[in-house]
Length: 328
Image (tube, rainbow, N blue to C red; front, side):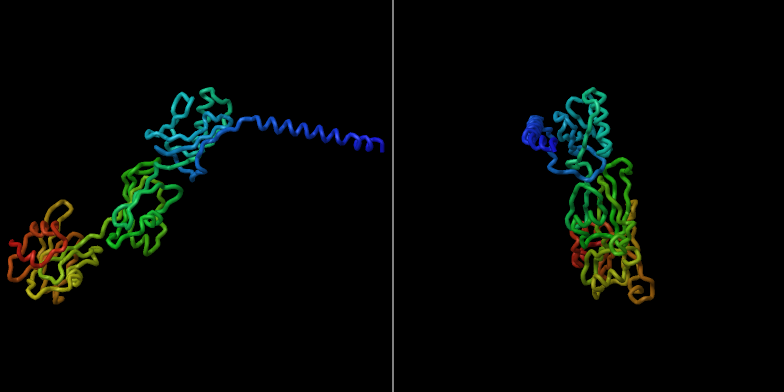
């Protein structure tokens, strides 16, 4: 009973002593300097390999003079104050770059056991370009996983003039990439069939080019001359192109000509029995992209390949009257 009485008697002194200790701790904490960290705007982008011109946030624990944002040079090197040599940052993951910076600080005798944190503030080394027959061509940075369909969606999707293939090439080589390799992606398989194997992942440094569909030029004695899409060799033919041109005029010749420029630049003139094809007495003839199907007038001299090409270059809205005026 006596000891309990003594504790109660000394309780105000004990409380006073505890409050004094707590006050001393608070004052000591307030006197400690704050450690500044690089202002990254809250950015901590998905971890990808660092590339030239990327903006990196470096934080070194208890070393505010070394904590800052640093832009990687165009040579892939990163330069930190007080380090004797620049650091090769290109191709490293942020975690690997932390270890390299820590080793450099130790090797230069600046910090015995440094604790380094690296965050990516801005990627500028991973551009993806979408060009060609899309609604809104653009270039954006591959921040995190990106697929081919997502890139096309950012470009507003394919335009009506898009061809049957999408060409994906690496114009900027990253570690493990094969620069210059072109992959052909069929539009039907990617979009219509939704084949997941064709929806390839993109990592940056790619150019997505959507060529316009090839055209077959129908000129001469037809009702509506013009350029019509050539889907492929099995779906583009003389009869189908004539149907798209709304048929022949009354003075159409019995013979027609296909003018074709081969891959080696050679010009070919192919005569076809138009009258027999129309009467189903001769098989239909397939047409290729950039072919010129020319139906001359049976009362006029037909135009040459060179004259037709010049006229098509001048205007794709070719009229029968213009063709008739060209002599052989």
